[in-house]
Structure formats: C-alpha cells, structure tokens
Image (cartoon, rainbow, N blue to C red; front, side):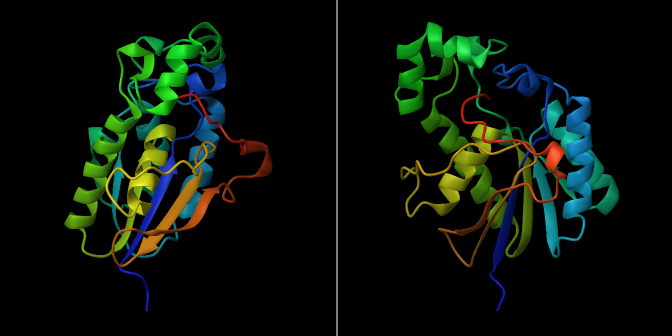
Amino acid sequence: MSPRWRVVLVRHAESEGNAAGRWQGQSGAALTPRGHQQAAALATGLADLEGVTVVARSDLRRVAETAAPLLARTGWPEHVDARWRELDVGCWTGRAVEEVRRAEPDRFAAFRSGTAPAGGDGESLPDLRARLRAACEELLVAHASGTLLAVTHGWALRAAVAELTASAPGAERTDFHGVGNTAVCTLVGDALPLAVTGYDDQSHLPPELRSGRQRVGA
C-alpha cells in the first residue's frame, strides 16, 4: 500500500542574494537568470508527480518566481502561507555571510546553537522550528492524504524536515545539511514522524545548474 502522505519540500532557485553570498532573510530578492533556468527545469522535473493535492509556498518573491513555471504547467492548487518564509536574520540582512562569521563569531555561534536570534534582533532557530511545525501540521490536517508540495527556503526547509521527522515536537535534529537551489526533499509515512526517502535531490537539473551544499546563508 502507498503511504498516507508524501511531502515534497523544495528550496527556491538561485536568487540575487545567493549569487552574491549574502544573507537574504525575509527580503524580496529576485531570481538570477540562472535561477530562472533552474525553475524551468524544476517544472519539467516535477510535472509528473502523482496525487498532488496542494502547492504550499512562501510569499517571498524568490519562491513565487520559482513556483510560477510549475504552477503554470500543472494547474495544481496553490496555497500562499507566510509561515513558509525564510528565517528572519534581522540586521544581518544584506550582509555577506562570511563577513558576519568573521566579524561576529560569538553572536554567530550563539545563533547556530539556538540560544540567540540571528543578528541579535532576528529570529532564533527554535522560533523558526515552531513556526514551521505549525505550518506543517496545518498542511497535514487539511489534507488527509496525497502528495503535499511546499516551495520554501533553505533554513525553513531544514526546519520543516526536522519537525516532520522528529519523534517529539521540537526534538533536536542536527543531521540535515543545507541543500542546493531547487533541491527536492521527500518524506513519506502514515503518521508522524515521517521517513526521509530523498534529500538534496537535484537530478532534475542539468549538471551545470546544480549547486553544492549551502550551509549558512539564508
């Protein structure tokens, strides 16, 4: 028998901030030309997914531009939800990722440990986990079965995977690395916790459009 749910999580395509190596957070960054190519390839690669009941997505521009070709091709129902937004990085928004790590090592370490918010005035990783847990639970409750697709951001995707696979809400999961642009992560199961059957899958992209792990930037 097929599992009750298949949850497919997708990171957005390459944005201007990704290309520049800068923290984007919840800013309205657009896709690069390379990103638009990735979005087109994603639409081709996912168009044959069976049983899709909804496409949930962040309301930020880089996600909207990523999802648009897929939605236009398939006509799948769309659900825009701000809870699928990226981590709010506060005053780090627009700054180079490596510059922040060098200039603020203690604050960066506290953020990564979950004991302080990003930038000191942004969102903490536990807060992000709680936000994504609520979004995931609502999605599962609203759709009793089927394939649920969510297009989101790097940190948000990892938070969603952690919450969907944890045996208890908020349980620590540290084994999920950053994923490339338009990477696909698939989880299946009849009840929580779900099982990961695919992670950082970029097989829909030609080799020249694939990206390595991006562990830090948001």
